[in-house]
Amino acid sequence: MASLWSTVLLWGAAYAIWRSYKIFTALKTFKQVPKLYCVVDPLSILGGFVVPRGWWNPGSYITWGKTDALYARRNSETIALIPIFVGDAMLLSSSPEASKDILNEPAVWLKPKRIMTLDLMGENVVTCNPPTWRKHRKIAAPAFDNQTFANVWEVVIRAYYQMIATSDWKSEGQVFFTSFNGVTTRLALLVIAACGFNIQIDWEKDKAATTNLIDETVVTVSSHLLERAFVPRWLFAVLPALKPIGKAYERFEKFLHDEIVAKKIELARDIKLDGAVSNTNKNVFGRFVAASEREAGQSLDTSQIAGNLFIFLFAGHETTAHSLVVTLAFLASYPEEQERILNHIHSVIGDSEPVYEHYSALVPVLHCFYEAIRLYPPGWLTMREPATDEALQAPHLTATGEDLVVPKGTVIVLDTIGACRNPRHFPNPDAFVPTRWAVSEDPAAPLPPSMDTFLAFSSGPRTCLGKKFASVEAVCFLTLLLRDWKVELKLEEGETVDDWHKRILYPKLEMTLITGDVPLLFTRRVKE
Image 1: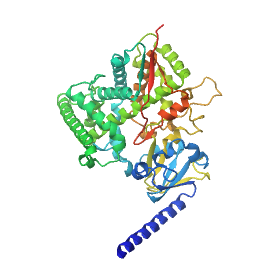
Image 2: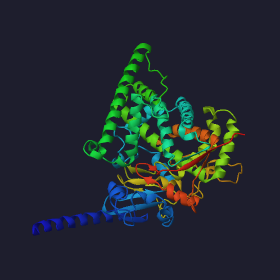
Image 3: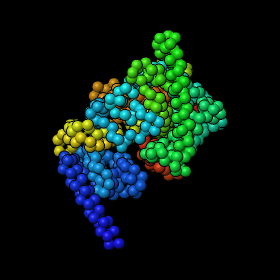
Image 4: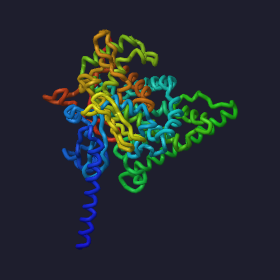
């Protein structure tokens, strides 16, 4: 027993010396920036999900609602996170300029291995680093063009009219949803299925085998993807609670692989007949496979194509659905903004149905969507590490005003929440102000925020490929819904709008930022 205790004490002493050395090294390395000490790495599985949150462990919520405490009070837009017991020191920055510089150089600032968690079905454009990333991006980008966006618009209109034809909307003029998330999630699924895979799913459950597979997979996997993304996939076959998710992955993976092989055979036949790969595929799936086949010697294999399509289906579906419901929650909170947007919608489309050609004229609707995701960015943080020692320079980046030297391999966390609420770029940063995005007729008014430093869709060469896809979907749906329905909050007795926001819109910060159930009341507008 004495020998056992001696061994434990020896290992404990060695660990304490090792941790002391790491902390000393971090303090010496990051002397230009303020420090924040915590018991473990707050953005790890241990810090985010296991160790209870408190002053000793801020967890993943370190960036939520604490902009003043984190940055302004320290007079620095970058701080060093120093874990005492577990984890490596890292930097946390809310500087839009520094983030822009980092994201503009993907070959210099790499994605660290710790966030390579979304390659569950294969390497993809989101997870890989250059030079592999460039091949994925070159093939993926052409799938998102005007033909795709026009198709999105058509699918949203069809889905909207199917939605309001259901029994939920056929009331005397008012309908209350305890969770409108379910509606936006269903919409996003139908749009992704149709525009991504040319699979037409009706608003109400479709019993056809293929569409039922998509339904089942999305419901099973998407509802668990965010909190399970850090779990090794092999555990899906071992842990009873995860087995349904594992089976859903397997079924969908087989479906994707079968469809990819079939499409490749079809394209090979086209090449044999016409000597070239056709550009006539209307859905993203077909266009993606075709783009890959056109890249002689640089095409993606079946696993890589499946990995990209998986990311497109689940990441785009989840984030768009939650961003839409947050946008509606804010418009319900500010009736004057909703009325302003309604008047603009009427001025653009009049009594006619909105068409894709109206998209650019409906930019105030888009501004509402931008403002909502500024306040609740789905990608609430981004991690990078430099391939070599790098120096960063930006206003207020450090407390001393010096350049920030980031040693090779050091993780820097780009705080999207902090950057999107940075008061230098967004005056009155915590308020919902869609007009901040519009160019004012007053020459003395401040310019709209720069899209280069609006990080909700990332920035630089790795800007989200689905940015316009989601924007078109949002503008079309919001235009139709606000034209026909007034959206309102149902406040509890004595509750203010701010109280409602704190109760309902407190986010979950997991793989992406999402909210809980958002209850909304809809009243049918009387046509004049």
